[in-house]
Amino acid sequence: MNEYVTQYYRCPESYIKFTVTGPLSKEEGFFRFGDEGLCYGQLARDTPSPTPSGKLCDVISRTSHDNGITSLPFDVRKIVDNLRLELYSKYSRHDESLLTSIPNEIYYRIRPLLPGGVRRRLQKARLSNWKTLKFPRWPVDRSVDLLFEQLLLVSLRSQRLERIPFIWFWPDGAPSCAIMTHDVDTQVGRDFCPAVMDIEDVYGIKSCFYVVPERRYDVTREYLDSLRNRGFEISVHDLNHERNLFRNRKEFLTHAEKINAYGTEFGAVGFRAGALYRNQQWFDALKFSYDTSVPNVGHLEAQRGGCCTVMPYFVGDILELPVTTTQDYALFNYLNTYSIDLWKQQIELILEKHGLINFIIHPDYIGKPREWGVFRDLLSHLVQLASRNGLWIPTPGEVNRWWRQRAKMTLVEDERGLRIEGEGSARARIAYASEKEGKLAFEF
Image (cartoon, rainbow, N blue to C red; front, side):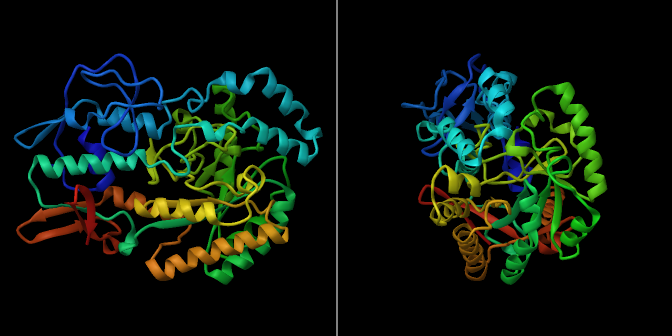
């Protein structure tokens, strides 16, 4: 399980020495490992809580040390997988009954006949209890990242180290990263893409457009070239943007073959499922380099749950770039908000953990003056963060390339000192983790 920590930080293996105090409980549930964040899984000598509410046991005091090796009352791998792969909830595991229930079937059969206003009211009513949900934590859940911080702190203490070197998360020492993505859901959105590209070029931002390959609108070579020739990226958005992609394993495999073929045809290496419906355990059938279908917090999504991290992570061979901010559709239609205040709050929380700030903005919904103004305000705020704080604003494809390079880099310690080896290492930076006032602190 030590490799999960070394992969996250890209630090030498000699600094990470954990083992499990067993046996573990049969039951899985929620508990704490430190003051912040929640864990989900099995425990040794304790019974975790079946719900995230109430007073949860904090097991950080259950650790023990012997010759620099720390014994933990849980398996790091299982806890991290349970959170990132959304195995803590039946809603996150994409229970087929949730998609094939009678109310859902009735709604999706009559949905094409319903006016937009009626659809929005029904959707809002269905999600009306979102404020009562305790986990993942709104508006950004950083449980995985907080767990890794605590584990690094424990390593510092158990081995009596002043600091631990690691490869910094982003190239050229950038404090964090932001990407702009656009789901093109309808012909209206497709036809509005030039205006979106024009305004982003004004702010010096290149984004990625997620194109629905079937039924919604004509995807012509001229349209794809109009995006690519201006330096913007293209990814595949579902197959036909219906809600049944992950409903049935056999059907999914058939659809995945078509989706993969469209990826080849479009020259796309990224994918996102319609409405963020997902089952990460099936991602192995998708032949893409990266995916962006998993929300950090899914309270306002058709499928709830969330991966509880603000960092990219691998699901098999696919790199997941989690959606870490609220979608524009939810902002406008569920929260009735036409400012960037919530986005600014989420950005600050992500920046605190040096994470990935990932936006979904639909060309379909920002054509009116009020929504357009919100989009401009967001672009302006991101550019200010880039100028003032060094925020890196690449395309998703650039993040994918960097994160894959970083995953293969090695931090070498020898008589000549510290150095980073591997492709892309010229842009990599050595950082140090140390303890300051009981918290983990980073410095170059």
